[in-house]
Each structure stands twice: as structure tokens, then as C-alpha cells.
Length: 500
Image 1 (cartoon, rainbow, N blue to C red):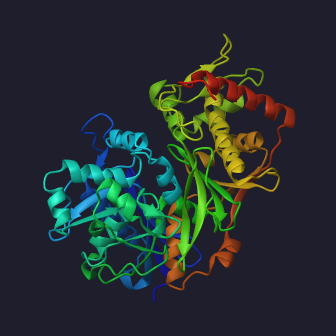
Image 2: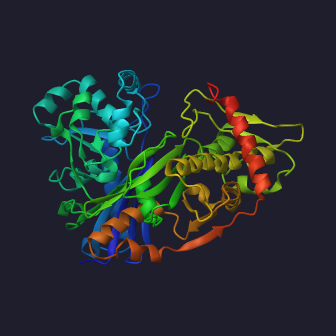
């Protein structure tokens, strides 16, 4: 048994491999980008071979950097971009189409038809999700209907579906294991999160044969062993979990009521609801947070489209900055007396508004407004949007007092002290930043290490979580209300329809 864990973090634009020791300290890391494909407006694809090849090459590089061999690795944990869909021939192992990425909108018309036919309530009740082309089920249906030979292969039992974790597991094990975990399954729109199984009615509704589907396992489970030629010997794969859930585990948010928020291109916030499926009345998603020993824990999830992407726009669109780190210095220089508000609805607004037609705007500018004030408004918009999400979560979970709430943050923007302090101020709660910001990779490593008996159970592991910084609210209650009221007024002005 080795003393190290290898984590594969397969993302939307790059793949990373990280080697951890038994204390989940990072020993080595490798990262590799891969091409994005946009064959039509609204379509986003990856070459599935790119996903596998970058996973394999980064794993080899990380192991080599750490001066280890396969014997030293106790297990592999995989975390991945969740709803991205791959279908392949079970005999040849060749994909029949490029991977359809979670951002892809080609199934939007099918989703509209399902909504018009009155299926929204059933889908929400069984899967916890809204009907949207974001999820895997309608992507599978599109492939079966539109790719030549796909339906025939499926009917003959020669076609397999998987989210990216499933594809990597299948390839790494030489086609011997066709499996996923409960978190990835819960993002397909065909998985019943109440009963922990593929839903036959939804499969029939989308005309998807059950034969294409993988076995659903715990996040910490036996996912087979890699082919020996990949790593000078076989390594067990014993962890799999979707990326946002993995960050939740990496942040040790194991207790009901704990919230993590990841700030990347967009922002994903998850509230642990324990063994209770909370049905959202505010267009949030109910999802599986993680599953151990056959018992799922659930979460409410909300997402906003623009977080780090706003800073990218300041850099690439407005040419206002040369590097993302400059925004913090500009925010410090801004005039406190100006009340500039940016609503970054460049691609619509996510939860809780879900208004695809809303568009961005900047309010409150004067002759004195300059780059510092615009940069400040951009960073503040992330805090405002996070409050929108968390207030919706509180309403769904019937929380009336948030004084005990602590938000754990990660992702690139979490490194900005100014942004995290404003986040704490506008929420009125403490914000904790962990010592290790690579929490997505940590979560997958934990699942693998737990299965391999290298790491303790959730309660003991949570005690080992290390905080790097805590941000405590400094803003007065009056100013917090004034600023958030102004934000809500500005949002109402960019919505495609007036709020009800």
C-alpha cells in the first residue's frame, strides 16, 4: 500500500493532476490545456481523446515530479466537469461524437418542448433539477437522434454513455469498468435522487435505453485498476465526484448548514442539507453533495454566470487592466462616496433570476467615475450576486437567523482580500479562506484516501481542515441594507421582464 494519493481534476479548459501525501499536502502538480471546439453558435465541444490524453500525461508528469512510482500511490481520485456528455462504441472504444460540454445549448428546443408538455414538476421532483440543456440527459437524446448510427448501436447494446469521470475510468481500466458516482449521476436529469437509481420514466421520456448507462457507485468505491502499462504498474481508482461537490468535500462542509462558494469563471455555491432533499422555491437545484456507504447527503446549489469572467472583461474587453491582480489595488483607490453599481448580466442572469435575456449595465456613473470605481463595482457585484444566492438558500431552508453562518470560499477570486472582505460585509457573515485553495482536487483525493484507509472519516477529517484567513463583517447594518437595496433596484432595471 502506497502513502500517496493521485487526484485527477479534469476541468473545462484544462486537466490537472495533483499528488498528495497522507496529510493532503500537495507534493507535486501538473496541468495541461486542451482545445475548445465551437462548431456552431451555442455549441461547445471537446475531443474525448483530449480529455483522456491530458489526464494520462499530467498524471505521469505529477508522479515523475514527485519522484514516485505506481507502488507509492494508494489510489486515484477523479473529479470532473460534471454535465459534459460522452458516448462511445463499447467494442471499438471510439467516441461516436465529440463530447458535448455542459455549456452547450443545442438541446434548448427539446427542453422547451418538455416544459411546454408539462414535465417540469416531475423532473424537479425526481431529479432536483430544472429542465435545461445544461444537463446530460437531453444531450444524450440529441446524439441518439442526430448522429448517424447512434440509435442502431444503442438498440444493439453496443453504445455507452458517460460523464467525463465515467469516460476516464473506462479508458484507464481498459474498458473493464463502466461506472460513475452518485454526484455525477445526479446531474444527468435522468437520475432519481430520492431512490438512488436511474429513472425509467425519464429514460422513456427522452428515449434513452438503459443499456447505455453506467453503474452508479459511492464517491469512495472500487472503480477498478488502471492498465499496468499506463503507470509502470496498476493503480486502484477509488474515488469519483463532480467538481463542485468535490470542492464542498475539500472544504470539509460535512455538516448541514455549511456553505462553500467557488469563484472561478462563474460562481457555484452549495449548502449542505444533510439527509434532507430541500425542494427549492427560488429556482435553485437540489443535488447529491456526496455519497458514502450507500447513504447520500444532499445540497442546494446555485450558480452565477459572471465572477472571474468580470475581471477578464475588464482586462480583455475594456483593456482597463493588464492583470487580474490589479483590480484589488484599484478598488482600494476608489472613491467611497461614489455609488457605482455594475450588474454583469453579459450572458443573462443565473440563480435566482434565471433571465437569459437580461443584459449588463453600469449605474451611478458621474464625471468623477474612473477605472478605480468601475473595478470596485466589478468586484462588489460578485458579493451582491453571492448574497442573492445565499438569501434564496435561506428562504428554501427556512433559515431566519444567519448569525452562525460561516461561508468557506475557494477559487481564483478567493485570493483577493478586498473582494473577500466585501463579501463578508455585504453578507453580514464570516468568510473563511482555506490554506489550500485547490479544494476541488482535495475533495477527490479525500474520497480515494478514505476508501484506501489512508484518511479518516468525515468528522475526523473536518477537524484537520486548516483556515488561512477569516474575514469578519465590518460594515454597519444600515450601510449593508442601503447598498443591497441599491443593487436590487439596479438588477430590476436590466431584467427582460419586471420582477413579479
